[in-house]
Image 1 (cartoon, helix red, strand yellow):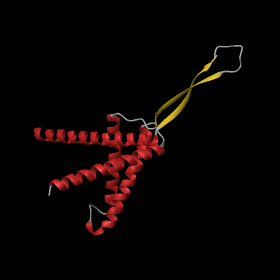
Image 2 (tube, one colour):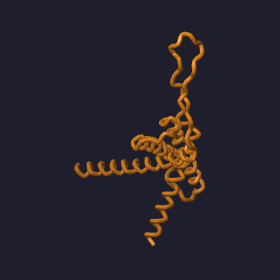
Image 3 (cartoon, helix red, strand yellow):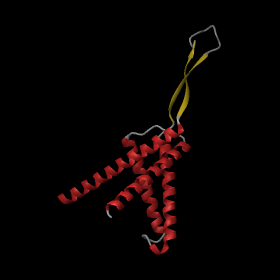
Image 4 (cartoon, helix red, strand yellow):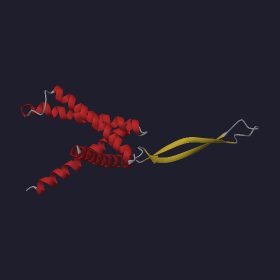
Length: 170
């Protein structure tokens, strides 16, 4: 029983570390998207001049102009939540595709498997874009840019790790 508890603890720790790394990569993608978009001016009316004056029918509008990033950068735990939800959907899509494509990877039908991976990546992109639009107050086009940068960073890190492991195993 103690061994099973230790195994569960190790799996939860590994999940926490994976979500933390995913959150950091998501924050990096959002940071690159914000740098590419630049600052966004947001205007809001904060009040009216002479609001208590009875002798004038005209009011001077006081407008506040703020410049802030287009996509608010999420905290670590919000980023972990976005990463967790996106990975749940990705696992669901992978499971559905494996049922549709008749089980595990069959190397005889590799074009079909490549098509499945492309569908899964596209679905994951759309889901991540939707989650960023929903959980962070931003526009879908900016969320798509942040999702693209996040995917590019993940690909770059994966290629770097693959290259380092290949070099170390020679």
